[in-house]
Length: 254
Image (cartoon, rainbow, N blue to C red):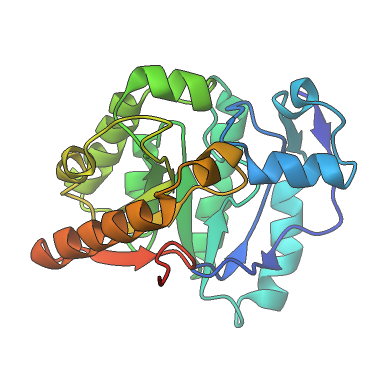
């Protein structure tokens, strides 16, 4: 697998529910077509030229060496490190990426740093042997495989993601779901309550609207739809004692 070297790795993120993050892979084979904000930004700033280039991931070969240098300097500032915000730590069919991600989490944990993981791939059960402070999550915006194939063509099937997440939950790990970008009814007709029931076992749910998609704003009732859906998530979480976070601008007034 091709690799690149970077000068830095850990950085403070501006994402509302994040602290520090690391992106130890360049590109993402999952090739999400929501469209993907990370791909749009990479293309805008000249980091990739084409979608085809984006979906051929390149590993950061000096990841572990950078962690050895940066952890001692930053560990007193870090509350948690998220893997990842502009790529995916467990891409389907890339064992090299999985191996490096697990090794990175272990190194951070050994320094007393909690990790928060989010993937559209499969969470390996090896994670159950790492720090119990870690939080393991999957993105899940539907249960419809036809929709998944349309918008997340290279990602793991929804059912497989859920099985891997549930296995970690049953092993005593903290688990969570990112329901973002949640699609409007003109993109797919689905019942949010069915999806919520499928993830009832998790400790936390993050819910957010779809952005950067003209078809969402073309749906005239999108503000009302997201207000109703977000409140449904809140009610479900409160009834089932699940922590929740509704992304900014998902609920709107008027």
